[in-house]
Length: 529
Image 1 (tube, helix red, strand yellow):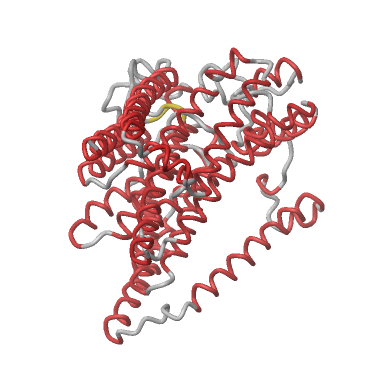
Image 2 (image 1 turned 60 degrees about the horizontal axis):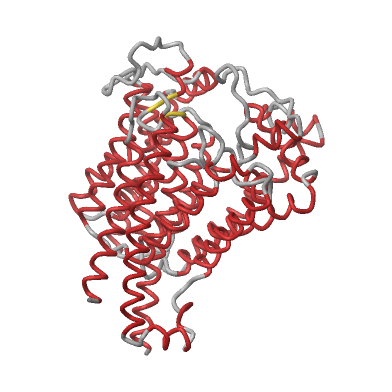
């Protein structure tokens, strides 16, 4: 009975993982028309079916154990929390505070399913947590599952690159002229460029990791797909994706500084960036991009990318020759890792000081080039400066209950346009009639919607997961992929928002890595038990 139950739950977990990670990003019901609704309905239906199957199996198993007299004894001995992590605790708290936020919300009709077109309400958030626990308990590594996910990610990335180059294999742009908003701002099978960018910052780290950690001939297709993934981030149209790309590479660099062999692999992954930009210039790649980034991206594709491309290639070859001839690994003693960590801290501190100085003094701002992104005002980040200021002020005016529990899951627009009378208009480059459905900063948005308690639990879920993976990275290199995805998602979401494609994916990435952590901890207990 126990074997059959375990097999059933593992099948449910694998099927759910494939449905959300492989099928959901590709799913389109009627092209781009009402795509967000189609994605949400798919996510809701799949989550409801598989979570009910899982819970039904768990209930049946619990009844069988109770009838045999095992279950009560386990509860009395306090085993109900054994094997649970801090990440599990934050996930449970997030679900609990989401329910409380709904209970105290004045907009329950919106809070349950979420704002129209976004659907990040209570139901979605409970499904996120439920999916995390299902996969983190029952997922097992299977080559077939990994292969299908890899093919799906490749297809979504490749299609995005082709769309930007003017190709339309699926016919989703039929009837659209190249200058229309939809033609330039909807992409691949995910749709909105911000949604697509959110997807990429979760998926591309997995592609880069496969290229970095792969062995033998498998590195050839892995490198080709990683190349397509980085190209998709460059071309998708949201500047926050570049920030996410930097975050995933930063994590990969730290993971590579423990061995010279891994550092060489890292240099090979970095080569993908200048290689794509140089090739784009060389073939005079003609692109269809959003108007607000078209000129910027065209400036990026210059012959000057040949310089870092050449330097990185020569450096990688030189390091490999030195390593092969001497057999010495100068990174084993850990000094390089400590030096880079110190340098990274200094650079971050310097960037903070420069940014602060540019707000205080015009002279400092002009000294560093007078770039608009260095001056935080209402127009900063396509109007994000104004909406962030309004969101922060509105949060403090929401009262004690509002500050503690928020205005309700995904109720940002209801609260600000009805209670705060938000006068901000969406940027002119957006579709006519568009409004701010969220704060365009997931962490601030969570603070407004679900208050201090919900935001703390949500942030704690990601931070505890990253810390948990970091501690176990030596015993399991796969933790590096999880850390890259969490870091990239966290960085991107500082300028973006949660939605029913990318957010379920990052929860599942964390769940898969959590399952690996549980396996590692279990093996340690058996060895020392």
